[in-house]
Structures are given as structure tokens and as C-alpha cells.
Image (cartoon, rainbow, N blue to C red):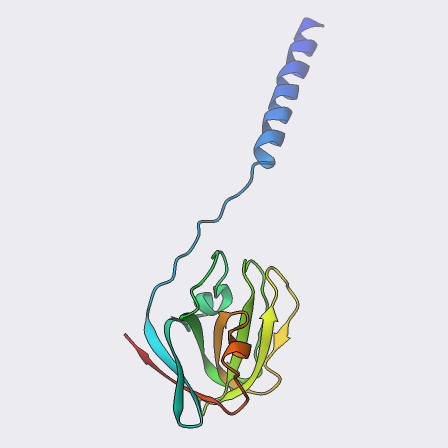
Amino acid sequence: MKKILAIAFILTIFVLACKEKATQEIKTEKVSFTKEGELQIFKADSLLINLDIEIAETDYETQTGLMYRESMEDKQGMLFIFPDVAMHSFYMKNTEFALDIIFINEKLEIASFKENAQPLDEAGLSSQVPIKYVLEVNAGLAEKWLLEVGDSISFTRN
């Protein structure tokens, strides 16, 4: 009987120890901005704004985007470059701050945009038209800059 109680006691401790480990929080390391180029937005022929950009073009970079970051400065953005011209959809999973998502066609013209995409929202945000590029900036900047479909961009890499 003592042997059975000892085994039961050891199993109870083991189960409790495993349960405690299973409920531990997994922390993701924060990612900081890395300037990889510059991007200009134009309204007609006049320069509207100059941004420092981080570029996402590998599968991993485009799938991760601005996830696991706490913020971004107003003069920064992330430019996604796709290998194809197609309809693309974005979501805000694991993105901790609101964004304006600017969809850009192969002629480097703004084709559509989604303003104030909400943090951590997994709803799909479609480009509505075929595009080649996407620029993500802090929420509210598209309105502040009075962006319109047809405005254009140019960019350079470091």
C-alpha cells in the first residue's frame, strides 16, 4: 500500500510540474526598424513626403511584415515587393499598432488603400485591384497627406 501511495504521489507531482510548464507564457522578441532604402510619395509632380523604408520581399519577410513590433516612426514605412502583379490581401495578425495599407500598381501609382487597419485583427484586407507593391505606414498618415488613387511613389535601396 505504501508503494502505491508513493507512486501516486510522484505521479501527482509530475503532472503538476508539467501543467505549470505548459501554462508559461511564450514571449516573442521585439523587432526593430532597419533602414533599407528611401521612398518618396508624389502628388502630381510635387514631392509630398520622404520616408525611410524597410523592404519585405522574401516569403518570410512578406508573411511577417510589421508583426511583433510596438511602433514605427511617422517618417518610416515598410515596402512590400511582390514577384507578381496580382490581387494581394493583408491582415493585422500579431501587429500591435494601427496602420494605413497603401496598395501600389506596377507603374508605381497608388491603386487603393485601407486606412486605420486595426491591431491584431485577422480579417483580410484586399487590394481590390492587381498590384505589385504595398506600403505600410502609421494609421492616419494617408489622411494627413491627403493621399489619393493615382498619386505616385519612387524608391531606392541602400
